[in-house]
Length: 294
Image 1 (cartoon, rainbow, N blue to C red):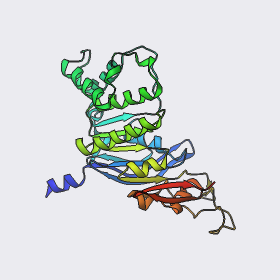
Image 2: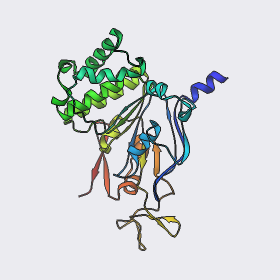
Image 3: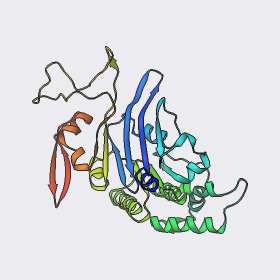
Image 4: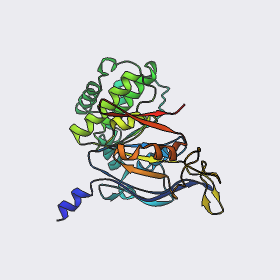
């Protein structure tokens, strides 16, 4: 009985999460669960809190209220070193002023397994090399990190996160700076990781069509706005709101509009609630595509 319960609770759970900066409410009433081995994408407009939410789950930020659970464990009760072995993270921006080789950068992902003041073991180097090969970038392992392109740096940072051998991978805009070919390569790699290594992936994407194609589930968020008389202001509401004009339906008091399988979440109505624009949903060869009205 307990074993079945533990299996059911494996994954990421966020309960009643709220975060504010000074008097600005950024995240409110965030509740969702991600099952083990799935690929889930956070989608929504700029400023809706996608990156902030990833930072809270990774332990980089502390929420005002609520709890984050990893495999039913409160992350605040997990030591930093252990959390670094469980969670791999790739941020949007990553700079380095030092000409470390690409291999050395990937090796830093092995730090949770290396004792303080110790050097990487042969095993660590071998695992780093295997990750580079898996990502298809082993050919510039000895190149200085500072001399590769922005897209190549993104691939290296994903490889670094994989070198941690995490159970969970948090990716903030993993396709940033990449051309179309490498965007698809990275997203296919992410799907492959989830399927073959049972890694749970939570990522943010700006391109809704990519989210439709490469997600098991989508969490659609909207941006919170200032309070008006104790209530959330809806930027698209107007006194003469009607289906014929540009206004949207009133939002619930929270960031999440909807979550679930892509085709149920990414509908014209819900996309308009998030972004305030009209779109059409087309199907081509069994794939759904979002086309904005222009």
